[in-house]
Amino acid sequence: MSTKGFTQRMLGFGLIETIVALGIFSIMVVTGVTTVLHSLAVNRLTAEENDALLYAQEGLEAVRAIRDQSWSSLTVGTYGLSSEGGSWAFAGTSDSKDNMTRTVVLTSPGVSTFSATVNINWNFTPTRNNQISLQDTFTNWRQPLGGINSCAQYCQSLITYSTGQCRATTAQCVSNGEVYESGGDTYCPGTPAVDTCCCKI
Image (cartoon, rainbow, N blue to C red; front, top):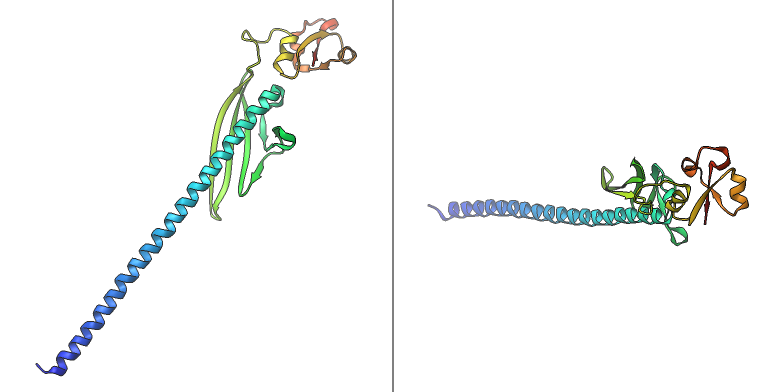
């Protein structure tokens, strides 16, 4: 075997080794970059899901605060929330924080009971929409155990009133410093002389 032929074969073998080594290195780099990018995306998604969960829990706490302020503020519908003035209130049909939109859906499955579902929607990517929902049931805890049987009990269940009395007209409510609440009329006797429920603060 000549020295020239041996040298050419060694040069060719070195070139093949270099190409194979570059191929393996490229695969390792692509795999490493893909793993890092996937890990970053998973970490970001986890952080956003935690933020959404806290935002939803805040929504349920807000509904609880609104219920405690006045049971009559709860009505079936879809709402947003606002805390202007230091207390929670329903505002519009949704509210937003950062890239998240929150809606509160109130339904009434029974007497003196409301179900609240808080939905949080956000775009993780332009083509991927995520949602988290939390649900809780709220009752009128100030309602008497035996149920409401009088105008006075109805007024007390609305939280903002201390008592109530049946009167003949809404004008009598006003002249006695009371507020007319039509929902309490069913607890007043049916005679025209006392068929209007007037609530006293």
